[in-house]
Image 1 (cartoon, rainbow, N blue to C red):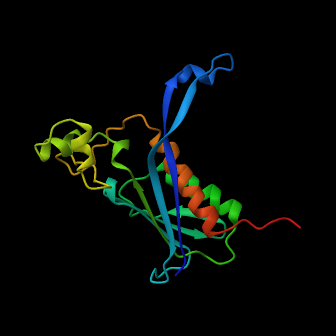
Image 2: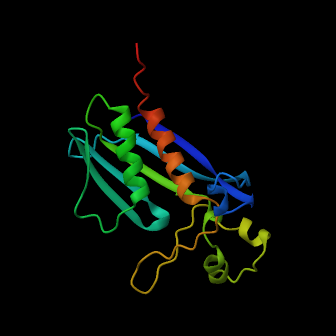
Image 3: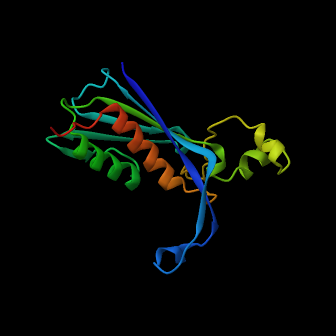
Length: 181
């Protein structure tokens, strides 16, 4: 069962902000050592041809899709949507054009520092120090609110971009594009 893994770094904006979107403004961004990781593997145990299951254990989420006739369809049973995952899948599959309908299981995880660690530190009665953060196990799940929905407090490291980049990288390496003659 072929497995492909890819990761992408977060970023830290040192100078700039949204003003850098205007041509006359500049900024300074550096990559961090905190990463998003995507694992793509063929999963013949999936019953339906064209099935794609995306799991994000940290967000307590699973998204299922069917890819058929060059079209990606989310399952109506999906409790939530993730536009970033769905659009990245749609564009990649359209570009890569797998030779056979996929049966894929995709797992997306992020280093803890992409999201606030305060609830985890408080739950363990740990101080708010870098040393305490280092003692936490990797890929901690986001806490949930009283209704069971994940509480996602981002830290500004570019989680959306890192998620998409790691997902695209894993898919492109799993299904290398056909080169033109």
